Image (cartoon, rainbow, N blue to C red; front, side, top):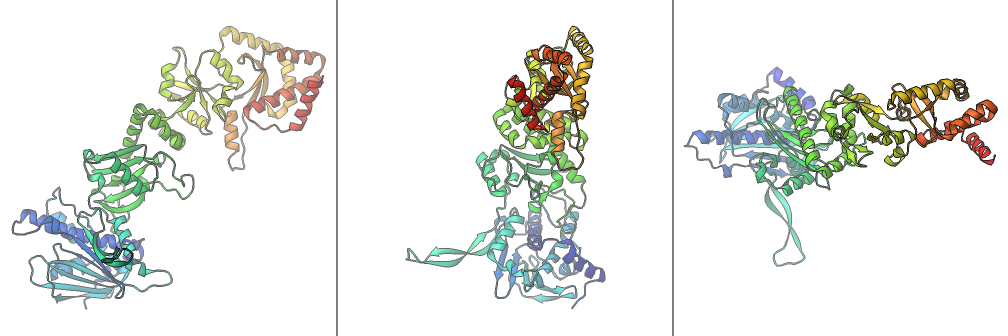
Length: 625
């Protein structure tokens, strides 16, 4: 029995108990090593014509024996002699694949997966004993390497009929915490191969149970063993785009990501450069069932040379594109020794920026070329784009602003900011908007009527997040955003401004009296000419609008905010003269009118009326006179 070096013992213990977080990984690692061994032999055959190697004969085999509790993984690759077994398996972190990559000039057809020489030892997570039989190509003698773990290993000569490597794992007995027997189940091995090693380029074969009719019988079945390929071998994303049909892309999407509807957009990506990668991205047509739950996780599947490394790599997608499904495959990733975690994030950042730019471009193309499909997508994920616009202090607003849609008072349909600006009047300096629960309710707001009459388009913001987006953006193509309920709307002519100013000065005492009646609920009461037919409306001073107050105060927080509300009275409405008359003759009744007017203006805005019974009595009293 030979002993591992002291540092190798510590590393083996650390690796088994810490580095690998998922015990399923052992099969991925052993299959990847088998693929590397086949690659090495095939590479040699390309330059050494004395090697009679046919690519179609190269394969990996898996077999199970429940009674003996063994899993066997074998390949007809290059094999190892005694010295190579000593170097590659006797010294942890000694990688034959890495040495091979360093010694040979890389060819287009050769993709060596292994780098660190530790993946093999993941077998000890599930095995009480590991036995490796190996015979080098064209050698006469085979050797067997045996180990039960950190105490050491032995290497002995053995008889082998053919070249290659066979690894036999004696699976551990079950414990209270771990059910190792599941790895002896046929369905489990199939699932693991499909999940992690589906795109290994060589066939992965296993004898599988299959039900078939007995000879001559129409009703009786028998179980037979059939040799089957467990992997697909050729990834769809590595095929030329012109060789893949739309139906094949959609079928892959449904199978891989479990969606019952076809995606709005399929985005194949192939990038060569500082960090080369291939990707296959899908824009879904609807939210996943868990999209608004803590269970939802963003990210793309990450592959390295066709081997699944991460099921959800969050770093590959910005939050505002978290709805994108798909995968990325790159051979340029710097993986850590467990191949589960990325060692450096520089390559990931390059890929993430490239993917982000690609998604943005494809969404813009969809918006311009297929408006119906884009609006379907936007109805599902538009809010996510809006979050991206104002999150991180608006750092990404310029990337996303042209993808946003809002309801237009002109078209009664969704419109982009660019489309709004193209329709603007020559002298118009602002993009006008109004907020509310629905397009119909906003369209009936008193503040909207006069703006529309003057011929200005208004964006109707029905999503609670919309106004925050506009405040974060501040402007678009040098046009500021202006709430029609803002005090500084500034649509009046010089003469109109002077006339309303005079009106407010002449009725200053009455307006102050009305403000005193409403006390802290109101910032000011004043006459306005912004209204056409409506008697009153509410506007705000400062940066917090009525809609923002409602949204923020609906959130679960102790601290509430309050908009600076102004009650504006239409100076051309009959109510204006009635108020002036009451101020002179019946201030008590003016007090009641003031409360009624304020309450009705709050109802129009969808605000709560604190004293509905009192207001109802006051209205009934006024009607009965």
